[in-house]
Amino acid sequence: MTATDAQVRLLMKERSNGKTQEQAAVKANIGSCKTVRKYEQLDKLPSELKRGREYRTRADPFGADWREIEKKLEEAPELEAKTLFEWLCERDETKYQEGQLRTLQRHISNWRVMNRPQVLSLDQIRQPGEILQTDGTCMNELKVTIMQEMFEHILIHSVLPYSNWEWGRVVQSESLLSIRLGLQSALIKLGYVPKAHQTDNSTAATHNLSPAAREKSPAERGFNEEYLQLLAHYGMEARTTHVASPNENGDVESSNGGLKRAVQQHLLLRGSRDFESIVAYEKFLFDIMEKRNVGRQQKLTEEISIMKPLIVNPWPQMRELNARVGNNGLLRVGANGYTVPSGLKGKRVNVRIYEWQIEVWYANQCVESMPRLTGAQHYSINYRHVIDSLLRKPGGFRNYRYRDDLFPQAVFREAWEALERHLPPRKADLAYLRILKQAALGLETDVSQALTLLLATKTIWDDNTVAELVQPTVRQMIPSLIPQAVNLSVYDQLLQVEVCHVAA
Image (tube, rainbow, N blue to C red; front, side, top):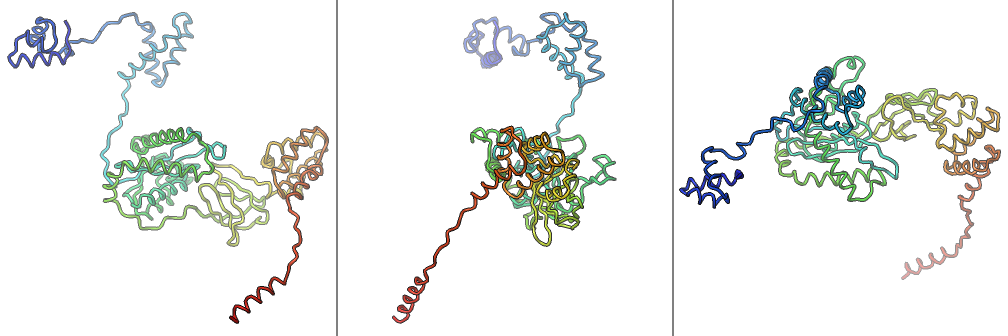
């Protein structure tokens, strides 16, 4: 009769207390004294007597080919079981069946355990108030929308490893400007300053990317001077993880996943992933982080007692640049270009660069504000800025480098193609440019609606036809004013009342 470890421990206890084998068997619910005698003689628990199975219940289907599989794995350990299985099937289509893939996956998994050492995560002792870790994490998987438009964004996420207190800001790219926004927001929310700020080694936003530094390895590049100035302003040290060691930033990396799971759950509770603005969405995230930080107050108090209070004013959440507008009306900001009003051609302007937009200032006035482009070699071409020049030089339209940006909606491109079919090239270009001028002077939506109607009629039309459709709408929008007759006798009555009041 078999027995469990708990039963054997109980009968041994009863026997040590002077009970007979029969009494111990009854107490441990064992029906045979022979079983009691067996475990007394062996002096071992049932679990200690079990032996692992050292034989196979059926033949290994991959036994004949295993040496070749093992050789492939030694040469290229990153090979996947599915790839090797397909390779085996190509050699002999009748030898293996699709259902045997899982068996090969187990074989290869066991081989990797026994033959491929792994780099372990080394648990660290966290000192309170020592460090603030910051990392950018992509939030696109949450499928958040702003006004029904897909919102691609990153969260600059900051975490205190000791208490796991966290804060974050929504940005569009992991740049020095976004790191500044995220770090300063976390410090302002916290009200205290830890000893150091740590980012991962691959964060180009914080590292020197000058032409000379690009030729060096990430470990040799050093920090960006502007980033060092920011940390010096707050009295913090700059730290980074070692190359290929993301586990050193493991606290914020782990918290990234936890926060995204929490946001996902709150979005499900909310019943909608659409927000009216970025501000509304960011407030939604703030509320979630506030709730997550409630249970961290005890350890946060320990950190605050060690950290320095925040006493300096924050840096402006923008960078300023002085640049000259080119003869083509383009303003270069970093590696990207923006059109500005043509009157600024050749002028030097001040550019204020924020996370989500840039502002162009001239003579102490903001003359233009537009969304900030990310990446490199991208262009923001506003047809309203160049339409007058194109009308004066319509021959430049066809080969204009940024011509595709002169079709603000798909219906505008369709309109130009329709004009080309029934007008000579120069007349078609001029007619389209005049239509674009109407959109610049009025409402683009009115012009697009007129074009949609004309394209549906399949008749011949031009810019004059569009003007006839659009202009009545404009006139209807302007209300007619009725002259009002002024009765001056009312003022005389008021004066009489005031005189009577003074006399009284």
